[in-house]
Image (tube, rainbow, N blue to C red; front, side, top):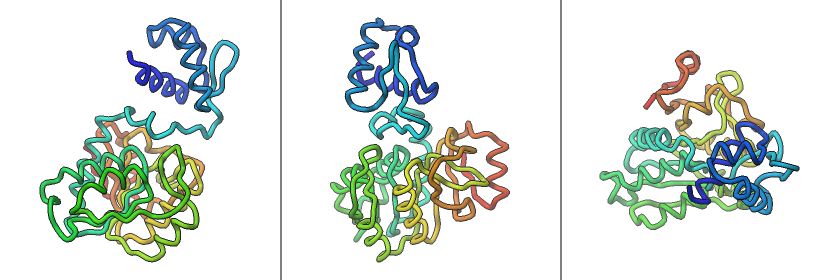
Length: 259
């Protein structure tokens, strides 16, 4: 197992359990305790965990992995969801994309769509995510609008009043949201309140709102609310979604696509 793969596995276990002992992690990953101690020390130096005697803990309840360490989680589900979301978007539309691993996959799916290889523009993409803008900027058929703002390192998203200024001047056909949580009662949510505020603005500027969320995000709550569930027109998720949750979203008026 490579170091990057090992680090991703360790961070996933930490998020799931909140605490890991060296011996426990070594047994799970089938490596030596010395390797795990070294990994914990290096991750602690990057402020991605807190080192304890004999192990490590996450930073706190609101702990959030940086985007680059979340990309491998539920990867196949996210790619299927992204392909389905991309199919919902029509040539010539103005599309808002929030940051996140699933919306990044949506951008990649749009980049390879055959009917979006030409146009003036083929698609207008408005995003506050630096990584998404970077991936799509090399596609001359796409018009890329990047908001201003201050970069949030965990998600590569631009946040703050500079981003507000751009979004208040535009209108969108559709906003595609990546969320940390989606619940019938509590709506769509993110970990960070400034990130949630930008996502909320994207929703307000859009004719319709699509949430792209794998089944692990459904029925959950998070700290910062983005919007109420009745703001969302379509939810695209994977087939592992709990049927009861899906039924609840449908009864709330959402169109649910399970892929």
